[in-house]
Image (cartoon, rainbow, N blue to C red; front, top):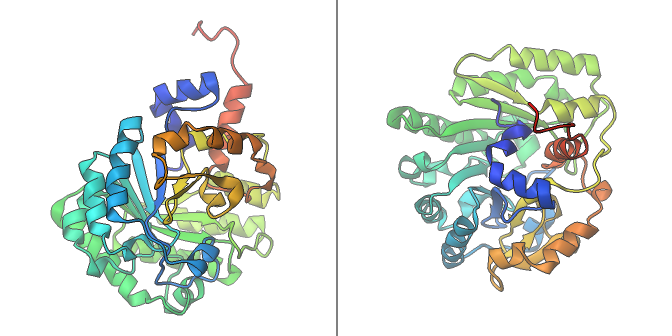
Length: 352
């Protein structure tokens, strides 16, 4: 089963039953944490550009040490360390990973892959459930185009090789993948097979394709027929050890020129996408990080439990107009799935 499947929510029946009966849950399954707003790349299409440009905040280790047990106790299952900035630039990154592991929380990492050679990855790699490197390129020229003038393609390639070597040597279960954001540069999308081929050659477990919804996106330059050929060529590289994950649902909407929402409320927020920023501020969704309309509290002033169950979160969620949210956001597929489930209950459900 692909990690993109929205029906993973059914693997948390108690939490799903809470949502189905009340419209909310006692705790999210996954929480996104921005460890820092510092980044060593200057990507032209960065969706967190304003955060990185305006401050250099980072969460202190002591704050994380207080936060993690609180999250575990209330029922959070997984922590996604990502941006804001580049999480591995945090000076206490390895210690934070170890603390998270000690609290028996699953760990995911979204990173630009630039600093693995400076970290004790041989010690901490097996603590991650998965690591996804935002690769977005297939050579030095395209890497500069997507990750900016500060990016170092060759170092990134060597760092990915390092992870694969550690994984093979230790026999750990950590899933390693490379991500590529499409719909930014048509000439690059037409050469996506080069990204797929390089990913496969480097020995990672998967390559992921997903459409852009940041500052740079182009949904018109490539035709539906051409995209079909691009995807077929990409999927043709799959083996029993290497897979290509494509967010088909979102691409179908783009190709049909139908990216408008068909749901009225952000149901996904009850399960995922809540963000704790590098300033300690908490937002109901990663797409609203840094924006007052998404702000629900600060972990330096309240516990996450208090924030999650507080009146501010309920009020913000109630006022949220999903029609104004970014198209194809991280919760889009799940929102559509859950609203369909809610509105299409079967008759006589106790007769199977």
